[in-house]
Image (cartoon, rainbow, N blue to C red; front, side):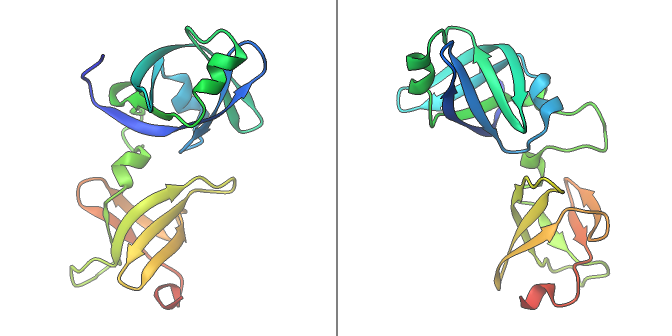
Length: 172
């Protein structure tokens, strides 16, 4: 068992075909990030187990993965519902200006020129075909904000996120 830090990346949703492939719901939807991985850690009722990735292919936007030791549909079906984790070191993008979803969750969200008080904090990042969406937990409840340049001014994984939401966003 590897003691290096792991991050959650999704879950196994179903078996695919008859040869042991599985369908993965991948939190970020980033195919390049998946292709950097050499193995996955699956966590379920029977504990955690590491599987080497033999191959990965995409079916539309859904990753289909062949894991070592999973040779038939019955074994693949037994993995359905398992949480999927990856090594943080393999998941981190090479680009210095890029970040992981796990880097953003929990960050405080501010408006420009704010008095220092946070509008809320990032609860999750929703993968959306057009663009990602920030799910921000505020005192008034959950607010969604498209993760686009028009609304997200700056992201600093240590200090927080500065946003310029559309008028009325906080009152919705």
